[in-house]
Image (tube, rainbow, N blue to C red; front, side):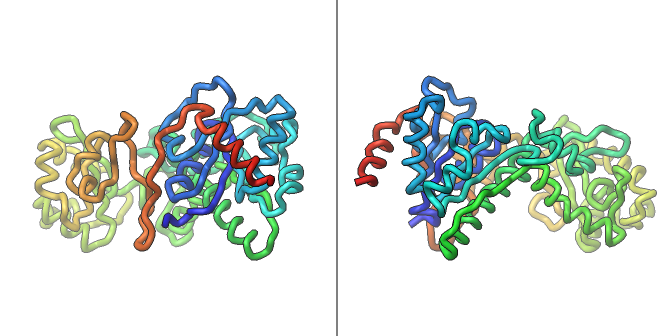
Length: 361
């Protein structure tokens, strides 16, 4: 039995972190029903996997009543509209909680439900820029560049919404009371910064870009190889740093005796860059991969899927004609859900309507 078997979620179709949160919950076994607009072509496909689709025109009073009947037997709701839109549709928290007092009403936005920017448009890079989470994502003297959507929409948004929904469901089961979960990317991405703030408070970090413990050192960086491909090293602990130097035949090189003098990092990084540029990525893999030198090649997703470690753990698959990452995390006593195919818009409308009718009897 999957860990979320018996949990029912209603998700209002959208883009970005809301659908990703729904996919994560479906991957863990929840029954996620997406309320699509009739005739829509979904902007993404993988985040729809494992879900059922019902097509409803939310401008229709009859469709609004159908949604309200649907949530009467629902554990949680996911919506990612601009603040106030759900209320104008007649599906705001007050209305929905009146129909189902145990409902967890999950709201996903970039800026949050209130505050001066609540009604402004924005995207992942804007949210993490304002929260401080983008600050360290660059070399010294360069503008920050973060992996698109990963830090904000997904890390600071979708995952925090998922945790909030699951915590809310647990609370509702003991208290009998539902509530609203206000998940904002600015909140979550700022919360993710606590590890960097902790380093700074302990004297190991700095707001001067390129000089903190995790964005400045020569031993924690990405390097270009002779073949134009890239590798990473992350030998933070002294014993791992010593091993890295031994592997690179630099253990007796006076230039690398000091590991943590930040004034030396730029020159040390330049010297390592010159060294790594002398061999191909595969040659460095042969020397360093699998050791405690804290090394990994930088792989494209299609390459990653074929890497022996990734393949042994069955992390990727080809399904519905798409390269997809399999559900995570793993549970010792419960399998991941066997994901249903990616649904067409409205594919399960009749099935879901029949279930609502049966529940009302």
